[in-house]
Image (cartoon, rainbow, N blue to C red; front, top):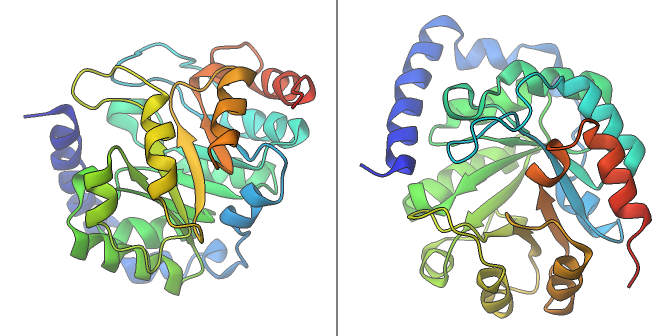
Length: 261
């Protein structure tokens, strides 16, 4: 079983247990559920670099990124730095995050927040809204086209933007984009975890022009961003590069401040 398949299997078990504790109806009654969301897609388009800075403590390939980081503190730093949006990893078992990290980030900043999670059930979308998210991630590699359509429409219906993540043209071609605002190209190979920006470069021209385009993984230099801007990307999801610093916010601020075309 691949690591992605294992994560999804574990996720389905967790969701089943969560539903027994907090129902979807209870999530919809939580105070943040009815807040007016901030547009994730417009946040990316309305800043010069469109940087989506991530809060990530660890990953399957890197078990020690910043295990003791505080989501609220990181969120404040990112907002001060002038990033377009913030991605909050909420998966605990594989990434050391939690849904409470999303809530803490929401309490600390006014950035558009992406819930970065392996979403396979509409319950997770209502949970994301209840804890302060403005957008959700859908990963084409672990969803059928009909699931992408259902999940994306559910998100749009409650005011959330959708970031659809793809790894190749086959995933892009099979995915319905009716309710997707942002298409993200993940440069990481799921089989061997290698990273190549060429993945984004080669796919850029195939993404519909009416979708916001972002590149994900392996982006850590001004040179990389310049290359990707030239082929039409609007934004860049950056996680490890900032989180490996003692102050992710200061690292993001310095990166943005020193960027020149």
